[in-house]
Structure formats: structure tokens, C-alpha cells
Length: 422
Image 1: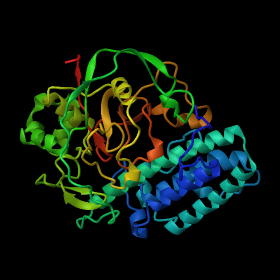
Image 2 (image 1 turned 180 degrees about the vertical axis):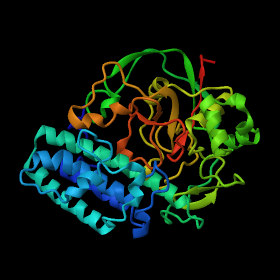
Image 3 (image 1 turned 60 degrees about the horizontal axis):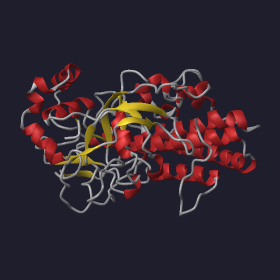
């Protein structure tokens, strides 16, 4: 389901769909304001896409799924782009190999920007003249798709910059949060029994959040905040990375084969970490970030707890204020929780113990758009809550994302849970 009633709050009003479209498009370019042309091309590992590719792919999405079928007389910007900037829509056609996106020195960045302008002009004309429900639904999906790539653009360019010995800042103007102590970690009872989860009617939802359905949740308690750097450092100092008994088999293999002994982006002394603002002193009260599912699971076992299921997480988060350290806060890095903020939204995507799969009665979107989520429902773990680089208006309690259990380059953190009521 994609609802045409989804809105983005801009300046305290509910703008037109055209204004929402332009707001999302300009927000993407704003993320790149400190990048140089050379920065847009680099691909530091197969999971990372060059910034230039992100700018083009989200534009390809609007061109292929909206302009070509619904804008009579629209002329495709380049036939080559249909192949170069398709991602995984096999029903659309072939695509350039993902791991080789960094080999594309051409088209240059300025041509990609002309491509974006070409599509934006055509989209404005279409949205001014047409109020078709199917067009509106696809545009709303496209806006949310672009917001997903805004987050990916930042996490990907962070990995790129981290490979540079100079440790440059992606954005040297990022503020540093005021120092504050972490709030006391408590385990609080969560809603149990027969409950409903999934997206409610009204508002936008991806198809993987549907349908809303009943679940049986046994009594549990959930952590009042995310796990901090200081708490994770104690895990490291207890030689947890050398203790096979704490790890899942695949996790122990990853630790052994890849030489993991600390979170991604921490320095060897475990007193500094690389951020989008450059290398900075490690804040012991801020949430630990860039840890895999395997590391999160091992930490939970070490702490005498477990990771929450996604059902437990959603029910616990459903009565929380949707806000926090999201992209709009401007830090682009997890920060210590303020009193009263349980950190369900923002800071980190939180690993759950739930495999990513379909809800009962799940139906993917029709046609090629059905490739968006459903075909990835295998061998991945569900994460919840958004991160410090998630667009503020993009998050909700029912939002599900997913990563392979060894993923670390995203802002991924830990919340603990326990069985029973204590």
C-alpha cells in the first residue's frame, strides 16, 4: 500500500505534492554541498555506492516509474542511463554490476546534475497538470525512496572518507553535542498479550509494513535506552572478542576471519572514532554504533540479556514520541540520551532478533515495484527505529528495514531485552 495522504511538514504547513517532491530533491543535493567532484565517484566496497550513483538512481526511479508511463511526450534523458542506474529491478531490464559502480567515471557529475534538472522540470509539469491517484501514490513512494537514499548516501560516503589516511570530514560544519551523562539503564515492562502490529490505515507505509495483524507477545522487559560506547568498551576489555562461547557460529567465523576486535570506525586505542565530522574523541555516554548483528547478539549474551524481537520493539515504541536524534538534529552521529528520551527513534537502527520476512497476508506491490521489498525477505535481520541520518519525516513505529547480519557500515546499534516482568 502507498497512501496518497502522506504529508511532509515544511514550515508548519502541509504543502502540495509538488512542493514535497522538490523538498526531497533539494534535501538530497544539500547533503553533497561539501563534496568535491572526485568524492562522488569512489566505491570503497561492494556494499557502498558512489554518491554520483545515488543522485542518478533516485532520478532514474522517477523517470522510469512515473514520467515514462504517465507523461505523454516525455523524452528520456539518455538511453544509457536505463542500464547504468537501474539497481535491482530485473523485470525492468539488465543493469550495471553493483560492485563495479565505482568504475563509472562517466557520465561526469555535472551531467548527472543536468539529468536531475531535466527530470525535475518534467515532474513539475506533470504534477501541476495531473492529479491522478496512481501518479500521486508513485510520487509519494518515490519521495520515500529518495529519503532512503539520502541516508545511504551519507553512510556510504562516510565509509569512503574513512579509507583516507587524512580522515577528512564529510561535513566540517557538524556541531558537537553538549557533553552529558548517559541515563541509568533500566529494563521496563513492555506491552504483552495479543496485540496488533504493522502500519495502520492512513499515512504512507511500505508494503513490508503490511498488513496490520495480531501477534502473541509474552511478557518481557526492554531497555530504557541504547547501549553506550562505555558499556561496549567494557565488553571489549573483558576479552569478549576472544571468547567463542559468546558468539553465534557465523559470528565467531566473521570475528576470526575478518579480525574484528572493536566497532567499525573506532581507532586501535578505542578512544576515538571516525564520524561524518572527521575523527573525534569517543563519547562514552553516546550509543555505540556500526556494530553487526553478531556483535549485538554477543554483547546481549555477555550482558545476561537478549535482543528484542521486532514485535516487542514496535509495541514498546508505539506510545513514544516520534522524534529524537534524526537527520534534522544536525549531528549525524549518535548522541547521549537526554532525560526522558528512550532513543527509540534516531541515533541508530536497532538490531532485533527477528529474521526479515513477510507478515501474514503480505502482498507485494504490483508489477516491477513489487521488487522493492519482498524479494529480500531471506537471510537478513530486521532493524528498527531509524538513525541519526534518517529524514525526520521518514520514520514511524511500524517501519521495518533489514540488513545482513554481518553489516556494519550503517548506523546500527543495540537495545537489550529480557524475558518476564522482573
